Length: 284
Image 1 (cartoon, rainbow, N blue to C red):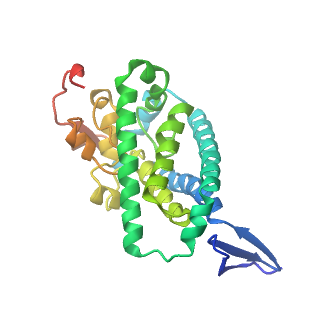
Image 2: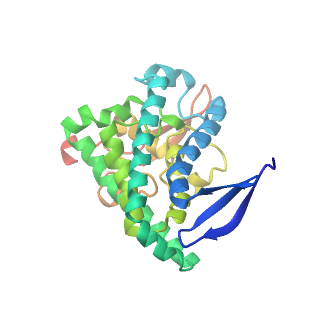
Image 3: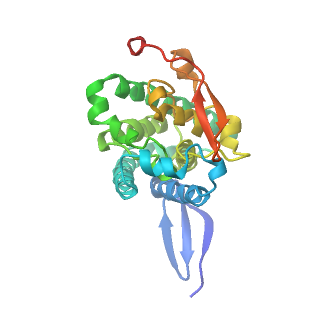
């Protein structure tokens, strides 16, 4: 049997590609790819950082701190992330099914690069806005923090594949609903969503990787990076740096921006030290 090939043939107006294996054709829709490709990207990209985690000179915390400070086992984290991704996949399938007619109508019209850029920027702003205000409220409301958001902060020292370790309700509201709103408001197609959500997943994983790698493009183009989010996961910065995953605009506008300085640790690696004195909690 032949190994197979990918045909560029578009099936009807739904924007599906035909994957041909031998004499049998397997149709994989954009909706299916949009649901599962970001999940695969999450684990592949996280796996890369797991391999790089042994480079102590690039870590924001030592391996010893990671083992001693975190309040949850890595097996529990993996199970929690898989549960959230299962829920996200269900919601994505429902969302794509509900919007299928609109997607099929738009698939017949060519999409310009300008339109794609506008959709991506819109989706980024929508996701940032949704996540900032909900994330901040989860910290402000003591009941919600204690019973829901504190689960994510059991990872005092973050690592890549713990990026989506959340309480199931938080995962649904913060990530899944936020992603759905970004998709709907931006008007992107299922095919465009494959790339956008894969990019968003890579950025989220990068923010939690706990590493400062030289030449990291996310650190060059985004102030919201692994060091910025590391400050938020420390006790001194837990009321600051709520913005995620792309920009820091809401932190700057609403006074929750905490700058930091990077200091080299004697044993190797870096430490992100807040450079602002803490404000009284009542101001937040």
